[in-house]
Amino acid sequence: MTELKHYFAPTSLDQAVECLKDGDVTILAGGTDLTPQAQAGRVKIKHTLMNIRHIPQLSGITLEGREIRIGALATITEIMEHPLVKEHLPVLVEACDHFASDQIRNAGTIGGNICNASPAGDTLIPLLVLDASVELASMPEAKLYRHSMPLSTFFVGPGKTRKSLCELVTGVRIPLPAPGHVARFFKLGTRPALDISTISIGVAGTLKDGVLSNARVAFGAVAPTPVRAAQTEQALEGQRLDAATIEKVAAVARDEVKPIDDVRATAWYRKEMIHNITKRILSHVAQA
Image (cartoon, rainbow, N blue to C red):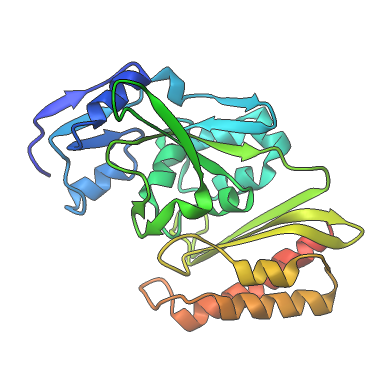
């Protein structure tokens, strides 16, 4: 770990983004990723370590119009237990329930999970199928500037996003699902709640009379980033979820992913599991 020159704990969003103008800043929230990565030498702490945990604008889970806003500092435990999330976004609760240990859930934040940009990030797959967008704040001049971008375009590589050094993730916004919305998440690992996923799958859409529309499919741990599966979505869109359709869509899913061999699984195994688990999830969706 490099020698720390400055420590800063802002109490407002303006103070935080003003600090980021320097560009030589490491952001600390829950620390569940940053601390072990720094200790292992995979991340170097920059000139200033900025602790953002005392900024009120980054906390809370609220209903704003037709969107649920989850502040970047919301912990995995808070998300799991919040009434709004449990009522409207049960697939996110399902993913949080498979997120590490209780201790990590109590400290780890959704903003950190997004910014860590792991291809196997547990909350990222449900957020993708829920059409989430990421809130960003910066201060390019003397005025606070905010904007959002779809989560589906936010990731560019392992540990890399489109967020610039002078931007801070302030939260995530999720449209309220329409009536008839169904969603499922599955994570495959040796110990699903504690291990990094071998694969993860999310499926969502609107189910009416056995037909799925507005189909969303996302995969984790099969590419350099979490990915929306456009070909699989196209094969699924507007189709009746009978056995023949489910088999066809699962085959498309297997052919669409391009995983690699690593210490957790071979590429062949991942493709086969994508095929098998997609069939299982679609069968569950059909019975919703």
